[in-house]
Length: 113
Image (cartoon, rainbow, N blue to C red; front, side, top):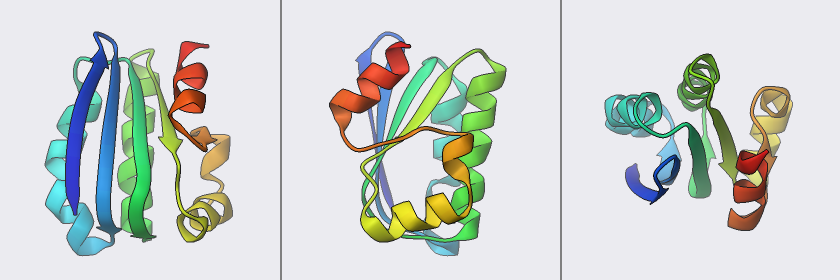
């Protein structure tokens, strides 16, 4: 699992994940992801377009980050998951807690409100 962080604006960060969010992939990014999602930015767009698989441990990582942002008055959205990852997110009911959007423009718009 690879992770890149782009500070788009002072309070807007785009985090791109690439690979499988299974036990190995989640373990590879867990600390770095937790740090990136709990400091500085209050608006986070997590780009899932290159995530090929999402396991329950990956769901936990995403939801923990979203809850941490909400507790700080921030907001996080999940962006551009492929069909399989989106289905996993939907079956887990994630969309009721974290918005799922199709692209960068939708992510920015969601994070503005």
